[in-house]
Length: 164
Image (cartoon, rainbow, N blue to C red; front, side, top):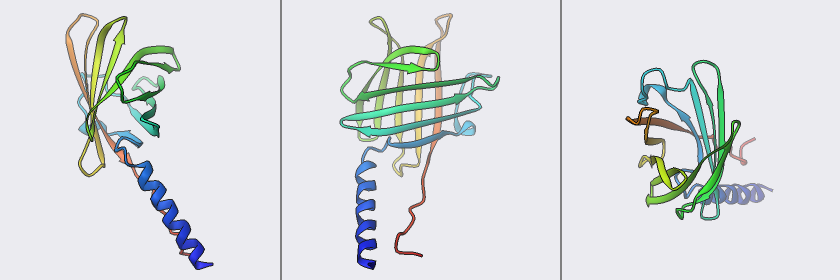
């Protein structure tokens, strides 16, 4: 029976390695201290989850703001630049399109009509522990705003099946 557990462990580790070939896949938690937001706008907490899907990702985020209000958004997109609908707890949000700019860099474009209203550059660190999302947009007065969200990857410990 020990060979069965060893084989199962190898299969699980191999599956885990394949699933994580996209450095964006995983659960990311906002680190407020390392992030840069306009005064008073940094969320109390934000968790982003990304899962691999074919040639892209399934994205989901949950945010809690300082005043206690919450926001949820989700979409599924390939890295081919095609727009997809983003939905959330407040209905349909701005469409997004994703393009890879490198093995650890993805650019997300958010549009209204045919105008790009915001862009986010997502970069995962070399060690895979951090993701920096730099978002550029305009506020209600048309002034350029840059937000830098820094996220730490949540790693789940691997449990050895050979231990009892």
